[in-house]
Image (cartoon, rainbow, N blue to C red; front, top):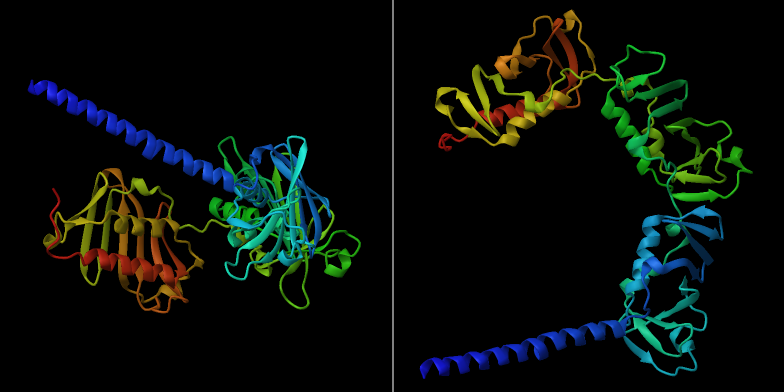
Length: 462
């Protein structure tokens, strides 16, 4: 009898749960979805739009056409379009929503600023055109009055949504100078003043890597070349000065101050840089073979190397950081040693720190600084005469094989990091002395001091 009562209770709970799930959850969710759908201005997917017309009251009509996965501007100029900006516009059209209705069966739209709309956005999809027009700002909510071209209803669009569809010609234009893929570039040619360098990337054979054409013994640093290429890939036009090449001499482009060419296989793109804008605000530039004069920030000109040492590999050491198994340093007459145990670094000496762990990133940072340190020039014997060791660091790998050894010399190494310091390094060819920037030396000294100042009550390794 009791079990029957429990069965009845269970059935009642199931019915109540089902009622709640259907009427309170499912139907409520469907209602919310319908309300959101009703707020949508258009029922369109971004992928179905193949043409866009943006008409701004201050610029006139801008026409964009889809070409495969890319977009082009066909009016008022023939130019490539900024894919990111166009996709942002498409996505905003797809999800554009009415905030609320402002007026229905509106005959006179002048009160909403829609007689001459500030902005019109039209788009072609499924063999038809749709259009939305934007007028004045609502003084209370700061939203924007809008209407569809084929309707007599006026509604409000959120100010934020309006800003995302209000695209100028400059916004929509492709502002890249170089369109080759940075990571696919295999040739670089740089001319600046009297300086000229040509670099090529060998992808196969024993001499893989970048080389300086005409100077095969020159050590080219891969990271420097690739950083330069990457920066050119991010270069963007700050203004479009002239759509033709009729007045290139006016911009100093008939006698360029710098020329940069990037090659990707058989494709080659060349940028020339002319005069600085007289009133400031950039330097004139153009892509050879493409009509028009643009303006870019002057810093890009300053970043173009004017001497071959800008690409030179002046690294003191060559090793991979995961090769380092042991680190020894001497500082203030004290000697310290760490060993790597899997991913951890553990003190071997001094005795009071033995078996205590160091945060791995702190030890790895010292290795990284040594690996990336470069010399500015070799030091002569008179420059190091009488110098004493201020501190030293030595890294070793498997079987205690030394892979990096640096001795910082006292007397000449400044606390002013803008000045150069003196060091000695141990290489396969013996010991050599170099000048390096003081900032790098001060940073390494600071970090090894921190390593040696581990709290005495740190937890022992397990």
